[in-house]
Length: 421
Image (cartoon, rainbow, N blue to C red; front, side, top):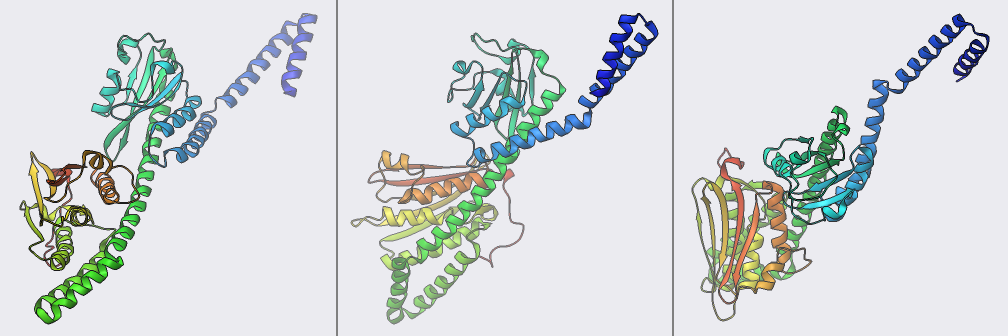
């Protein structure tokens, strides 16, 4: 600053005295000083440091919002945080169907929850490529009066699957340069990473809850006492069967304690479920509870999360067994057009449409707890293509179908599990 002041004073003196030599020297000095200032201001290292700090601030701010995933509230908060860090006039977040969050100009044209309507967004979702659009026609707004003339649409990729988009709208295409594109891509990667971390954290919590629930459901006093009493009743009448039940009982709890948080083969999950059902058949009698199974050859080796079949069978016995009729449960595993499906079918009480619709919502009690947990764990393990579907009719029975995804994408055991089931 002192140097600049002296240079300016010298320039004034030169102008007043008419010394062109001094004037030229002063001008050159000022130009040199400006060059130093400009170089210092736009130093690449300094710019990178500023951009890194800006991204770090965004990462810190957005992490708390995406911890529970992207919903309407968290997405809008993230959009508000991202907008000032870019040159965009508006920022939006979508999933694969609707707008989840929006911040910036023309918010009235982009209502939260409204369906995706631009070709660019649909293309990014389909092709998993960042879209840089420099005209209104490229953006693809259909019959919308908008001031936006350019946009960047970046796919959000989680587990190699496009789960949504991060969108930046601009009133001028001149705002989109290489830096702006890099920032957009970096923010999308940041969101995907945070979502991945939050999902891992959620899956760990869910696995822990499932372990506790499995232990509580299986070691709860009435199940424990009923099973022990059942075994005791066979000691005099059928000692051989009592020994078998006791051995299965020990194996059942050992498997529960060892593997409730692990992924296992479908064969192992099936055998563990059969142990549980065997105790219930022994308790109620084969004339009251029965089962059958049909597993397509080869599917017994696919890897699945532990406790995805047993909770559903447990619900079938606990909620489906009628006083005036026997209960039959069938387990099927098969492929349709390469997609793996597991069905658990019972001919018990069934449920009303209202109850069926509520079973996959968050619940603290009843059948919905197990079914919601199974659905969440399926999606967490196999991806968004996996789901749990329920069909039921009062007085007829219930069918629970688990769709796991293409068999070509599933993990398969390469060794024999027959001695470890």
